Image (cartoon, rainbow, N blue to C red; front, top):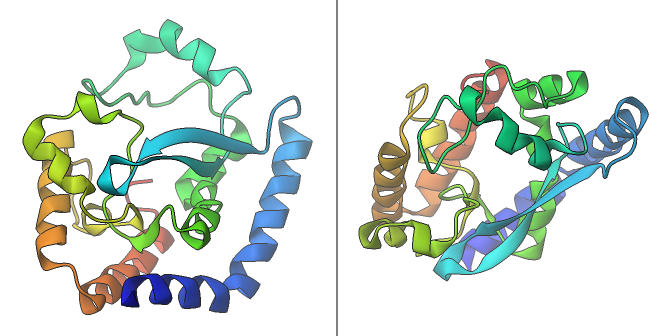
Amino acid sequence: MCKRATDIVVVLVLAPLWFPLVLAVAAGIMLTSPGGSVLFRQHRTGRDLRRFVILKFRTMVPNAEELKAELQHLNLRTWPDFKADPDPRVTALGRLLRCTSLDELPQLFNVIRGDMSLVGPRPTSLRPEAYEPWQLERFRGPAGLTGVWQVSGRAHPSFVQRVHLDLAYLERACWRLDMEILLRTVPQLVMRKGA
């Protein structure tokens, strides 16, 4: 209950800062990349393996998912991850949104709805059956907007390393640790680390 209350208070107190940004970014996407939704919606797996729709600003061309199959040769990661750098599907504004993490702003609405928390393991698009049994433990806490591996100083942790960091967080999770992670997230965003 304390975690949920903290989420709501922090999001609402900071609303005068983030809500005008949401409107400005939405207008920018409509002007620079017409023909698609302002928001990118994707099913993710959260706490207790519950699927929910995560919200992000659209940073790619409207037909990005269809192009993914054609770009498998550019994949820099191994399954279950996909990352191309540079990714030709990303728009010019999308690159700016990604490197500043502004594309994640709509997830504050996921926090308000209770789908996510400010701090916790990042939700993934993979279905539960894609995980090994020991990895399913990462879903015993709420999914987070930021988490321990985002502020751990590791540039590109592997999927297994991220799961281990999530499990370590869940073992120690408390209000003080969440505040520490939130405070450490700010300089990460300012310095654009890992974006």
